[in-house]
Image (tube, rainbow over all chains, first blue to last red; front, side):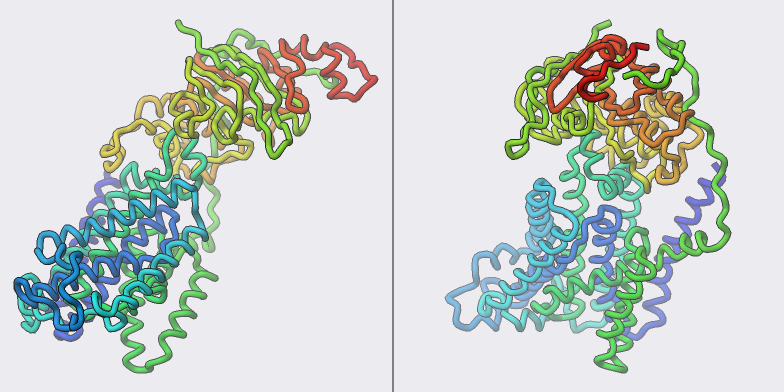
Length: 375
Length: 249
């Protein structure tokens, strides 16, 4: 029991530390520019938290989270554009069209915009997931499929110059739900929202990992067939994690838009989708904090390095990925376990001999003498 | 007490024209420890696959009045039919307790899954006792010895509330001690289960089988007690080749 309480105190302490860093130290110590960068990294880390659940716990290699990130981002961007344009107005970039497309109008109201950011990617992931998992598509095939969906989405966006800004994307937002984005106080508020949402997501995944559902998800990852023969439908178990990961990615995308000020197909295609994954792989996909810390570290390293040496980062990123996959396939988060295995190879505790020979041994308890030969 | 039974009639499995199981009839009663034997390629595992929904089949396989053929794997499992595989397939990254708890939970309410486990369910406690794994409950299943993994699998079938247990070569690769313990375990569970064991090991069969069904080339060629089956000339021919007659021990 004491060990249990100690562990609980440790967990609470870790959350307290994270909150102190995010809400105390960071806003005090960082300049507005750096704080905005950090807010941007937090949005990317939200995608990573979802990937950690779907890929780390559930074994679904989600190579196409850009699709959901983009959906959330574009819905938010559409709403911000319409809000800037005022009632009945339309965004400046739409010049030749006869009017605002009907699907833009869906997100004019702040309520439907927020609902849409959660529901559109969530439902899409549900449909995609059920279609894919029911057919028992998994492993590399699932990864390719999800990557293809992100690529297709990016192409679709590029082709829609007049209705969604094409390859330029959507930008120049002036306000966020009534708050002027030019005001540093409001920018700071956006950072706090992102930080709070990220902590909430980590806490959600934490609870899921502790829960029976989390155990079941891991069981599906390691033995989908076996789970099926225990009376579960693995497709439903997987799709729940996949849809939640999609919603996390979408919320990350939605907050990314007012913080960064632009969303374009460049941020949702194949390359960014792989980028989301690298942090998760480096940090340790199967751990709770590995994905979020890995993602933050990779984002930070990326921005610092590309400030100083522009083109080096992309190579370093590739090298990092290769090194981790080759030497630490489970990520930096698995280091303690790996070191323990390298260190003292302690023998496991003695194992009892076998099933307790209690209870009634059945009517034919006298085992017939074993003969050799015969049939 | 009601007696459950598994009733198979005219079961047939064909892959691209090759008939793996050809019109097998078999009835297994509760309390009867039935062994299913036959040479390689006789269709033993295919028969189990067909009953559990892994392979499409024609004919009939009924348990508790419910037609199993045509249902999905998880529906068959929920109807009370459980199986193990030739290679122990436990969840290696989870503990013994977690493995059993998952097996016990297929009918849990969805929302309840979002909570952590507070206490060990009684059925899990009982299964750990029956299989002798209580002391290993917090050990990862991947760290268990080969025999213990098989017992864990059997334990998972017990908590799954399966009434029909289809065990595919449960003692393959086990030491003599482990075999004996497995045999005793099967004796304990057969009282309230319908147990079918696919097995190659003749010593194990002789020691523990209540009844035996012999398959060859997809057809049932003999059924009865060990002695009856052993005395059957067709069985002798299959196991010893034509022209031989085995001594009856």
